[in-house]
Image 1: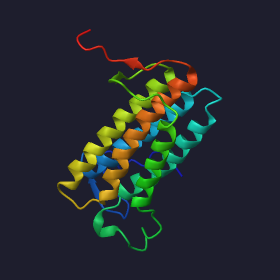
Image 2 (image 1 turned 120 degrees about the horizontal axis):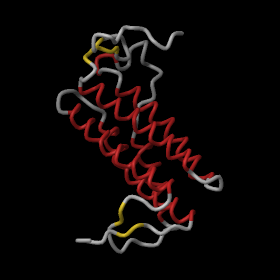
Image 3 (image 1 turned 90 degrees about the vertical axis):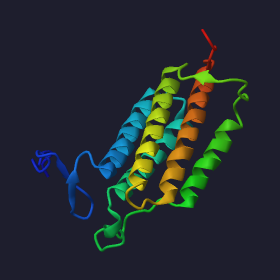
Image 4 (image 1 turned 180 degrees about the vertical axis):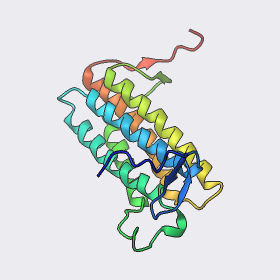
Length: 188
């Protein structure tokens, strides 16, 4: 299989199921942001200290889930459930609940927040905060897509919870690295 196909040279790309759309179509923007989020998580995982194996395992699990989520977004509603797409995993409430369980588990080991914090601290925490911001952008792009086409509501719930989890994981990375969260100091 070749890396280049030349089929996108005119500004179009193929969706799952065969139809072609412009590369700036809302659906492509949405799954493109999810792909960018997945890459940001890969960078965050590469930034973890070796003893942060539990965080690494969680990020690997999320990256796999995001591949499924991206495939779901790359499938137009009229192609869902067809022979070609019947094996695609559809994001569901159980996926969102799993993220909530992870948030609760990691947050239980953190000091309660008494104010806002800035993205930063350890290198791993900063990378997780970048991933959190990309997750928020992906969520906004799915909202945009949903304004013109039907979207599985669980996708929005998942991305919303994921950004919360990434915030908690960034704080966890700081705690494990022995680095304090960076407090926001209003007006300097």
